[in-house]
Image 1 (tube, helix red, strand yellow):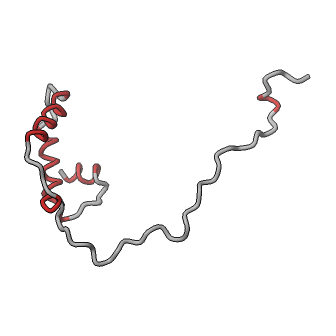
Image 2 (cartoon, helix red, strand yellow):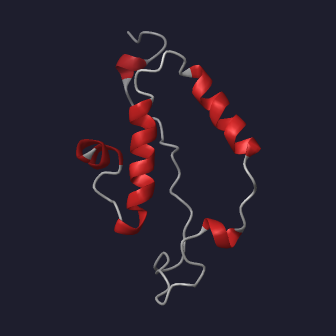
Image 3 (tube, rainbow, N blue to C red):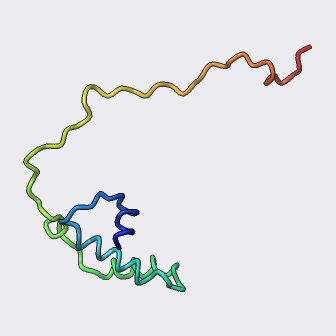
Length: 99
């Protein structure tokens, strides 16, 4: 499990999500040798469609806003530079050979 966590999540794990990480690991571990992996997504959709809907309050860990608002991008946003590059003088790439 430790190797899976470090490989999948690149060491960026939070203690409050530990149960979710464990659930996902168990799900993947129990299906690692499945002969019908194509059916996995189908069964997942079946279970999701048959489950009762959740409200936002039930879905999120905490509906309270964070005390410290995350910082955005500093400064004004600019358009990326163009990818058009002017043609360079390369005679060996000419379509017709030069004498």
